Image (cartoon, rainbow, N blue to C red; front, side):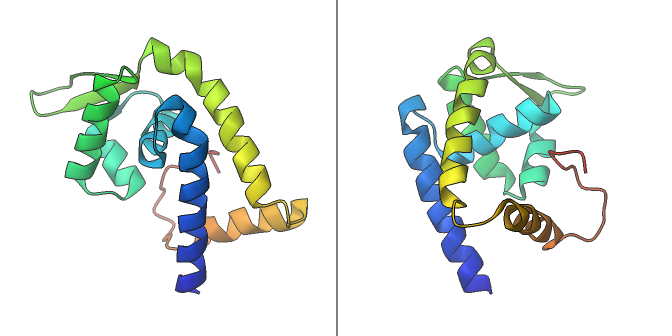
Length: 140
C-alpha cells in the first residue's frame, strides 16, 4: 500500500509542478498559499504543524514566497513569532491558480467515478489521523 500511495503522490506532485510552472511556483509553495487562503493568516509554526513539514523547510519556502511577492510576514506576539498572510498579488492570482490545479486534479482522477472520487478523499483523510481535531480545509 505504501508503494502505491508514494507513487501516486509523486505523480500528483509532478503534474501540479507542471501546472504551476506558468506561475513560477512549486507544489510546496502552493501548499502554503493554499493553507493561507483556506485558514487566513497563520503563524509559521501553525503552517509547519498543519503541513507536517519540518520548520526549517517551511521557513525557507516562506522566505522565497516573500521575496517573490506572494506573501507578507509580520511580527507576532513576540519577536520570534512570525505571522504569514497572502499578499494582494497572491489574493488576485489564487482563483486562477486554483482553477488550473482543479483541471489537473480532474485529469488525474478521470478514471474514477464521482462516487469513487468521494470515497478516495474520505479514505485519504482517514489515513494517519487520530481524531485530534486537526484542521480540515473543508471544515469537516
